[in-house]
Image (cartoon, rainbow, N blue to C red; front, side, top):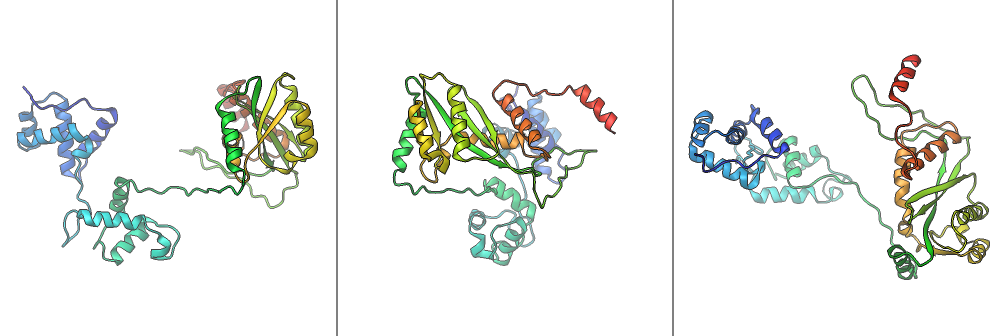
Length: 360
């Protein structure tokens, strides 16, 4: 009876073990994978040892390593195997390679970014390693969790009242005022009539979509004045040709009519000029509307900003609208789905295929 057996396999582990068993260039990995799979299949350790041509004690060692560390515990790779050098780089060399990969390429090679060939050439030129392939360097960086990431921007606010405004907005987000409604308002745009690059699925028989180039855009622009209701989790708005204080005041009146007159509207918005116009602020005081202005250069405090990312991705990216009406319809269709007023299925699949055949 087996005293040492492989633990239950996870689906991904089983798939990878099957791939390892089929490796022809790495007999060690293939043997270890066979040991694990045979043990999981109920074979005794003695029989497994005879089938894979090793000792029963080694079978038990492999099983113990797999049960403790999973596939990394039994995987073996001849890293950076070259002539006149050790079969594996020592820990000191690996740490130095990782340190170089995380160092500034501008200071080391005069360029703004590393690539695998450039990093390999630098390591060999500096005699950190005598030879290394691009594939093994890629695997080493992956195992060391060194990966390419997009840089991020951050803008420090210069507002002397930053913390006062920040705490006021955070308190508003944390707790709904009694008898009040929390809203966020911002402008999305300008919306030009232009091709917008995005992503598409391409496979056999379907090429990557191509968009026209535009050098002159004479269709004018539109602006989407948007409102996000924190209580109802709704994103709505209106389309306007201009976004002066006149249009903004008309938009506020439209927002005010959507809620009971006795309810105070607590609105978070940025410091755009029309928002601070005296006529707008006087009207707000008279109609139970309270403004919470975000600090200078800190519009990220406005929660509507994160919803614009999804709006742009699913309503505009990968499109080439020729009229503002079509562009507006796309945005309104997304808003209907986002506000749970519509479903994804807009066109029946069979109807779509029938129209495609007719068009062809």
